[in-house]
Image (cartoon, rainbow, N blue to C red; front, top):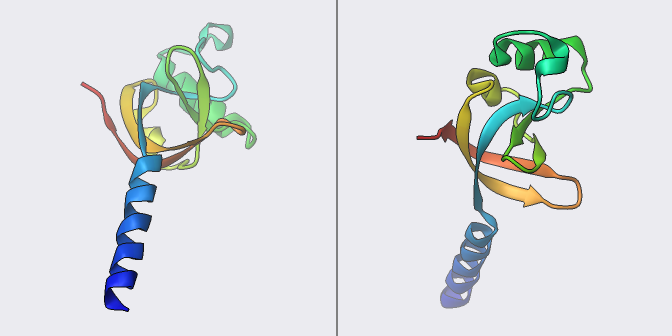
Length: 107
């Protein structure tokens, strides 16, 4: 019985780890995405924060050079606004939401 429980726990942990991916990109917002020029607010970090504050529907996001992913964590990204980061988490492809497990500055 104990071996079965241990095997199930190990399998579940491995499956959860398999869902983990690493994404590298720039912290932005869902309104501006890749291009902050239209807002005419500089620097870009200020634009990101202002867009978030102006409209409750606007969320922090990751732009990876191709796609904009809405982030599940809406507190931690503020410290990284307009900076290149590495995010570990799970992407829900259908909704383009990235579940953030870890966020750190990218080198």
